[in-house]
Amino acid sequence: MEKFRKLINNAIENRSSDLFILPYQNRYRILTCVQGKKSVVEELTANEGHQMIAYFKYRGNMIMSEHRRPQIGALKWWISRNEAIDMRLSTVGNYQAQESMVIRFIYSLKDINYRVNRPEQWNLITKLTQSRGLILFAGPMGSGKTTTMYRLAKELAKEELVMTIEDPVEIEEATFLQLQVNDKAAMGYQELLKVGLRHRPDDFVIGEIRDRETAKLAIQAALSGHLVLATVHAANAYGVVARMQQLGIEKYYLHQGLTGICYQRLLPLCDGAAVLFDVLSGKELSTVIEEQKMQGMSNAWWQQLKKLREEGRITVANYEKLKNG
Image 1 (cartoon, helix red, strand yellow):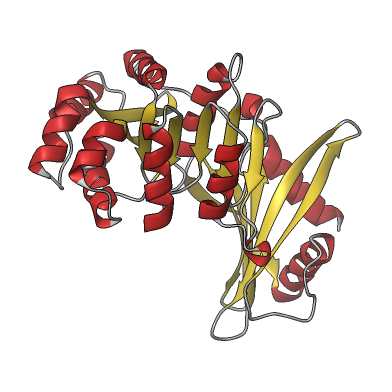
Image 2: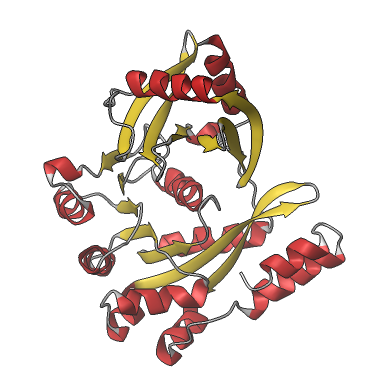
């Protein structure tokens, strides 16, 4: 067990977002994900891999005898006498009945390494939060969308009530009222958002808009004077508008309730990773809604990447990879 504890403690020390226990041929590989980059840190025998998964299933109050069906669990991991990290566990078996596990680490906001590439972009997004309405965030998994929303909301929480609705809670923040989706109790995003409105918060953080009802309620909350920060799946900033329309939000309500769109990527710069945004707001956003442009990145995105390349802060390979989002 000491070997397993060391793997977890090292992952936490390196601020990994996730640790993967994955079958590989007749062995198991341990991978960590740091700032969106996955790397193999250890190889275990098949027996050690099974033992490690069983150890965390036991700690996470999961069914020990179930090896193929998906399961979820959670536990608190003490890294010192006075400091603990919450961990979310997820398991599933492959077609050969080999079980795998992913462990997500839940850090407090102050412990997350977060750097913005262009401070003027952060100033613009912060200014948008003063306008109320709905601000939507898009970007690949691991690009820092939740951290961005939390950092914005943390400033607002000094004088306002912030409520978060997530599945699951990804970051613990004592100054927020944090609600978590519970499907077994029939408390999904829609139900929690309805309950949340009765609590009269000033600001909402919604983990993900994934269906018509949640999209509709988010727009209604924005139109009633709340600030709503939420993520949505889209390949670029323009695609966010198309996604909301696909979810049944009419153009009129997008004009009225949508304050801004922020697409973001965590760029692997030569001097360390940093977030770069593609921000749509004001007249530019209104034009995108009206013309229903669904593809591509803004000119500002290309110009920012080009400048980073000229400054030697990003490689040619990464420039080519990221120029289209």
